[in-house]
Length: 114
Length: 119
Picture (tube, each protein chain N blue to C red):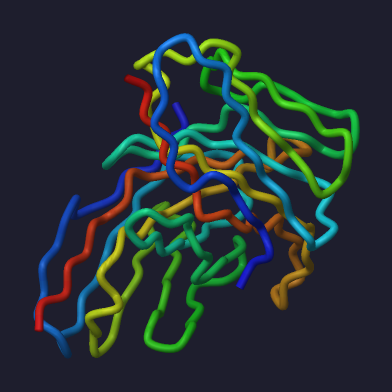
């Protein structure tokens, strides 16, 4: 069964600290993996997207890694800011159809305290 | 920032009412989607469209219907709302894009969502 599991479910850190969020997936055949940031009451916004051949991609203070062999990804946030408080969603796309079906994780709720 | 809009942002209605959630995008994307999301849960695809006059049901069974008469517009209608329809509804559109890695990806851009409460 194609699934995307994220951990931890929630995380609280102090402003300025780093953190790493995890994503494990069983989606096959794999096409790409994306990390989205979703602020409360808003739609998700894409942070990074990685295809099979990529193992790291950065977007400012966000760095995503991908290990396609172990089917794991992580999102590392450096020098956290209060505005980083949000839900971070891992989304994996398969290659099984024209639509490129998306499998969503439940997200990690990150709270950054001052 | 994506040019995709949803109205209303919040809606509280009584059981049995007919409602239409609006979604429009100005990016010229052919593909559009409707998702349902409950708090702390993953997004579930309820409808999608490849283009004008093309609509398909998604993975999650839904009593809603959609239409795609114009490229930029993808409204979702509930003929008779029930409390079980209380949820957040997210609209998205996508474009096929070539990545630096050589692959092609279908990146979805999401609207701000409509928070629906049915009493």
